[in-house]
Every structure is written in C-alpha cells, then in structure tokens.
Amino acid sequence: MRDTFLRLLTDKEKNILHRLMVEDEESGYRAKIILLKDEGYTVPEIRRATNHHDITTSENGYIDSMKKVSME
Image (cartoon, rainbow, N blue to C red; front, side):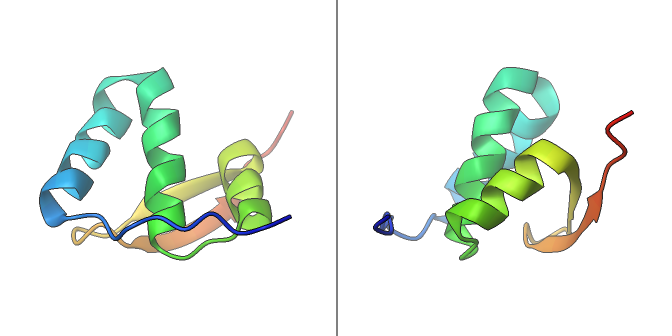
C-alpha cells in the first residue's frame, strides 16, 4: 500500500474540521480522518482510532490521546 500525501492544513481549515466534528456526526467522522492524516497518523492507526478508540484533542487541534472504547 502506498502512502497518500496531502498538503498541510491551514489553521482556518483545521477550525472548520473541528467544528464539523461537533456539529455533524457523518461529516465529523470524515473530518476526524483528515485531521489524523494531517498529524501524521498512518492508515492502520487511523482505522484503529476511528473504529475502536475515543480521540481527544487539545485546544490547538493536536491529538491529546486515543483510548480504547468498549465495543459492548
């Protein structure tokens, strides 16, 4: 599998994506993927983060932590 290269996001774009994460569940899911890729996460890491983990971000938009969410 080859890596997908994206340009760096601007602060304005990051703010829009963070707003989408709060306002719209489906768009928020996609926004989360874009933000994780922008921060350098790999596809397997993003898959784990979006399917089985809760992701918290800091005020500056960076990932603070990823913790496993119970799948019960």
